[in-house]
Image (cartoon, rainbow, N blue to C red; front, top):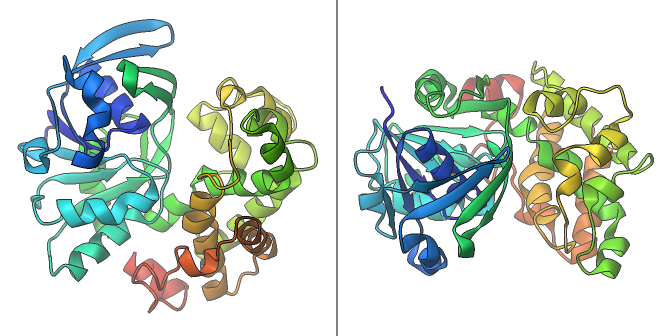
Length: 365
């Protein structure tokens, strides 16, 4: 399959950035946004233009189509890219599953949340049985800020290495061969469990955010987690979560990249011999990221519910203890009054509750 046209579903930071970047690369790009949010794109829709800046180079890119008509947006597109937070996947499954063709590739390009599994599950609940060519990444392919009301994006990083897997895993080759045409940073992962365990956010965000909750409340948004919240002591929580994540992966015969090497490979860390907390503090990308502004933001809610809860559940199935992960889930829930075990992702909640051991998981993913 030769990729020439890409539909991007979601007009937030990732979607607007991808639209400008892929247009700059020579692809014909359509943006879909729901009627509820499409009004936010009015500035861009005036001329269908997005200004893009990366490494000091600026250009203005002409987007082919911006619409709230999904069928128009995806017509004749080889790749349909969904760039929304994990909590929005079921909505997009509801509207996309009935109209997508089986030869169109669905790429979920965001922080992973077993989104491809949930997409297929939702489609089946709707009575739709298609051989979806769907896959997901372990991270958004950019570090970026989009100023939608100004029609511009400022890219601080194009990721150097991003994992991609299809679901089921026998679709990975077909999904990868199409998607690598638009992003040469993609590397095949064995399955979506690997992709989920390689998600950098649950590893780094919830623990330090929890430990800095008082500071976040006090400063009312004047807080930089990576620069001031990850210290010589709070980084020990990151390391403890990493050890438990690696133990879960090992029980599945999965080899993960460690925290430092993963971020060097993706371009977030300089390749320097410094303690881990200093690499976060001085990262050319991370040190400029402000926030979280609230303990009730995605650093806690999304990264616990779609990340740590699943890692904990995998640990239970595989008889791997995860005491630090479990502590963050419980205390994070207590902090903001939520039951993350009840609302978060588990094998059961994503339709895989029948998988009771390593062999079951690897055979059905």
